Image (cartoon, rainbow, N blue to C red):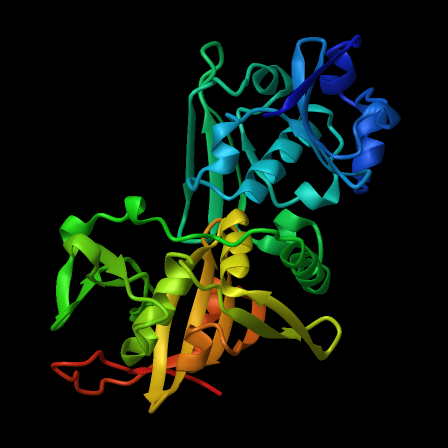
Length: 375
């Protein structure tokens, strides 16, 4: 729940035109320009501050402000799956920049329609909202205040523009955030529509999911009859179906075992590999919190050695985190780590350059393994 702080100031301090800055203000400097006494804010807060009847959304962590923008979105939108939270924060900042005529370079790629100061001031979190993402290329938000008609902004679905940082800095922020995750993402059978189950092989069923780029990169889940004849996900005791059980962990979440995950991250800005140890459940939890959707594809299964790929796709910011992993039944049981060569923030439009399809024949009783990633 956001903390509401009421300050005696004028709306004009927020929305009145200012001299063109043509520079990117720090969040602290922007907050002060809006009339906010930064030192009075809690060290860690996600706060709505009302100034003269207008609301500002302030986010502060460890004493550093990371967001200052107009509060124009319903609070529930930040915690749901309908939109990427970082895109919402970027849009808030862009509207504040427009209202104050700051013209900061970080918002140079934003297009506005019918978005003057009066129209922007009429937008509240309760204003009817439409939003869209044009195939991970352009993000659009459109409000319809009663008095003015549609007010819209659009901008490229680019993580660098939205994050306001280069790839190297964004990678380091991701790594720091991942290390801070306390609890893993748990699988929840209540979220699954088991009425859609299909027979996979005798004794195992598949719940088909969406695919990403290729049919073999998908969100399929694999289940078996459990106690009281209720369906349950394949897990640590199902090493015969190593690929399918591992897919369940990355797509649905962990159950009774959360295997260690060793990420060997190709850190582009610093020209080296950085190794980060976490667990599958914590990795999934953090990626989901950042607006990513997981997809799993099997490259090969050679005896007890699985080679596969995980794509954490963020449609709103147009990127994928790509993991090329190896795993064994021991890893599935939690006795050794899953090892993954990892590239963060790969532009989604470039994915066609990293893999190719093999039209091999499908085995009638076992899954088809035909995803061949380029080395």
